[in-house]
Length: 259
Image (tube, rainbow, N blue to C red; front, side, top):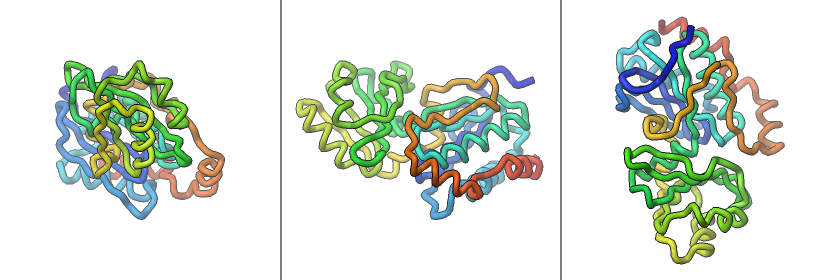
């Protein structure tokens, strides 16, 4: 039987591979005790298993110490998401652990830190030609992120006017390489107070899962990435490069080794 819940007073692994950044974290009692976020030259499928192994060894944890997993399910890179989700599904199924999904955009939005309920946070992933993976979040009174407008793939200039009623007077835009998106936002909403986060913090860091909305997956083998939108080029590239994706056999071998 799978354990029935994932929450506080537990040890768990969090993973996100939705962007160029690869992030893994170990969390205990809602506190991040170890985290590593990389911008690697190699494919995530090559580095994910060693990155997790390194954190476990750093904390002297065994896989049997873990009570559950959290995984960023996107939106984001088609291939990157498959790597992280496949890894988490394999682990959860093998060890009969609960797994919770978290929005990769929420992990980005959490860079803003708690700013109050009247501040809107817009995470932005550049999807080219001024289209984006985006959403609107805010912080509640318990300093947790809540979703206001769901994650989606949008034409930025067309989408912004449609969400005016959901925007506070202060807006935080979070993302890497989003200068054009910031400029367009300020053109459409010149009266808004805008803060921009574009540095290292703007990548999705796995440890922030404790601050984000999470959804417990009833059946881990059915967990699927939230692609929101995948271009034909992305799909074709993924199909041609399946050898870079961590296979379930590879992940099972890792779990056996460190158990």
